[in-house]
Image (cartoon, each protein chain N blue to C red):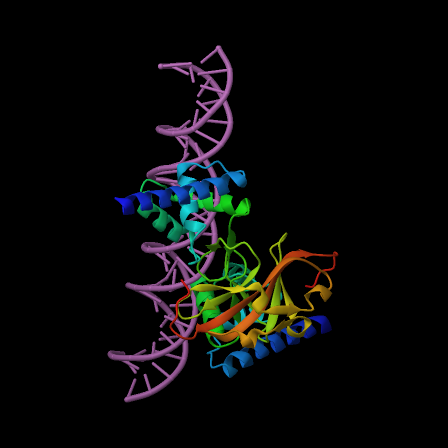
Length: 150
Length: 150
DNA sequence: CAACTCGCTAGACGGTGTCCAGATCGCGAC
DNA sequence: GTCGCGATCTGGACACCGTCTAGCGAGTTG
């Protein structure tokens, strides 16, 4: 009973946060958009659009694929997500909006965030002929050790 | 006459170079592979596979799409090309095999090579938990000035 | 010549992402 | 309540990218 109540309140809090975030970014918080936001704004797994669809459908079975794609594009446009084209097969989404770098595990294809201050890029401002809006270091290799980040 | 001869010899030289390069990398220099190599090993435009197909077809109309895809993958496997997944829409190929960085023009989508020593990445060797095989800086922005590189 | 290998071709196929017409929802006006 | 309207959602069609496969032909070996 208490557990149920606790879970119920937990869910409520999550929903309220997503609704608030959407509203703060000028997005109408429809049920489908909130469901997508609940998952994609919390995740660390750098999902592709179809993975998002699968995950969200598990909780809201009646959501359509086109809605998920539209919603993700809307979130990117409104600054809630980054779209990353790092792997060869598809675009993935990352809710971490602070500047950071990426490490691609060549064995599993998984992507890991690398904090901005762990690696420095020097002399980039001295490049002539380019107006650089954004940059990051993309690393490829294999992850050592068995510890999982999330 | 002399011009024709000159052009003819120029073509001969190109062909011989591609043939030699293929052989040096253990690739049978078939007519189709040489045609692909003639274009893709010289270009600076970072073409997608279908662009390669279009370009090569202009000179060798009977080449098939599957052959171009197979040939490009073979070249990547044999170390003649890099495959880059930078843009959102498709993989592009780069014959420049030395380490270098990339700049993506957000207006045109074109990709420019940035020499390795123009930008330095520091502290990357101190990253724990990763065995890094390769890395590069990916920059996005717009190209200033009207001068074209190629 | 037969058997084999290799490369090429054309088309089929599966996955990704977009587009569209119609249905549905939310909400204010009456 | 209900009418109307704009925003949103839906399911399917569509286009594109990359891979796969069956069959063909050329060259090679026995």
